[in-house]
Length: 369
Length: 224
Image 1 (spheres, rainbow over the protein chains, first blue to last red):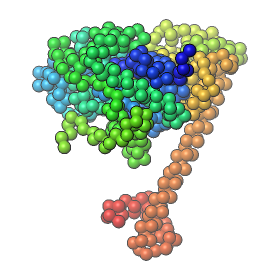
Image 2: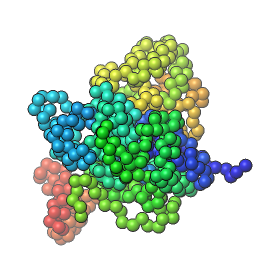
Image 3: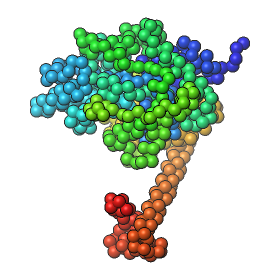
Image 4: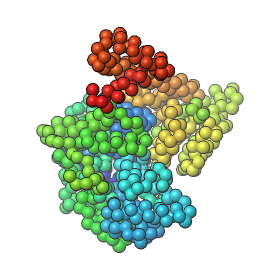
């Protein structure tokens, strides 16, 4: 008999960036830290949040803005939550239906996915459609409080469009996006991988731009915990974050690519062809059927310093909630958003010492300082 | 306003149906029973739930498979209960619609297959109005939902009271700051400063807090 392991139940959504949790369990990193990690696959982000709130899960793979929305009582079943660690950077893309892409390309859209250029081209497509009296285009995002929603809105607004007037934004589960696009229910969407590659491979969609180009090295999923659990189980949380950090380093090594892709594609996890997982994991994306682009940091996993959250990230997410009318501007709420993204728990767990200056937020249309 | 009903989330449809079965005897004596809206694009799952509800004597069961125009339908039907299975992958979409329409401000009941005391406590802390665990207690659904509504009302009132108390505290702080500004700039006592605020408010038919806010903002602009 070995030492008794501490059970931890984690909820996840089948997406590539659940990789660090999957690797922590399957490659023994959790066990090495004394944790029996149980992963439960969920079908919606609302379930992830609610089941974390009611204690069915101890921790969860969570959309980065979600712990803020829950803590500020902006969504149902609101309890104070924390984002003590970042699980993945980048990994999303904006895909449009092929006829729309053709029109964008005719109007000068950059083939390599430059967000400023594709945004301008998309705005031109919309004004041409307006002149012809055609209907509004409909875009899908996975949740109103998500990086996807804010990236899509940011990209549209930077091109002079009003995301609430010029297009319609609706919510669709990630695994249904590509099918909805093929069926003509959506004209485009912003989603995590592998669901952009799915439309590219099916020949129904073209990646217009991607998260890493919109906001380089930005947090996408975080480890979500309730404040109550973090306070009650600080040692378990620390051990878990050390395990995930080691797992992230394992995932980041290029010679593990094939094994990781196969692991994630398995029936317990994403349950898809491993061919779908390889492009984003390896940073060799196909933006269109015949357009290959090397984007080494398209989706990155990392332990150590880079997995530490930064208060500036929390503040940025809150600023987007205010910008799009989900929250009211309030210095106290902003302070809370910063605190939810505090790196303290993570620094202490990994013995990193001070992470240093909070990272400055720089998106594609902001001047280089 | 469709604000009266309960949203029911099901961890396992079977749990809900077992609980519902016990309603039969109770509902036999009632006229009509509850009106129940089942939202599910999975037709098989939805009809299993529907059948269970009808067996239990609930005749006003409406199935909705289409997400289009749903909010309007909810407003028209104004159901007592909205049933959504947690397995439904469209939950995020439903949540988005409820948020836009404010229908999210309804009590929530959750039917789960098992739970420990900690998760029940956590559920109540999180604002779940009724957390029904399979096999623990065979209770009738109607009284559970009634309880959920009354608890939700009490909880909403509590939240409102808390909000009011917070606002009142913030107002008092603002008035204190405004008094401080007047005392410093016009060399007044505290009582004189307050009287001046009150007089100004009365002359302008405004609230004292409004005058105080204007003063604090103006003073901030002038750089104290």
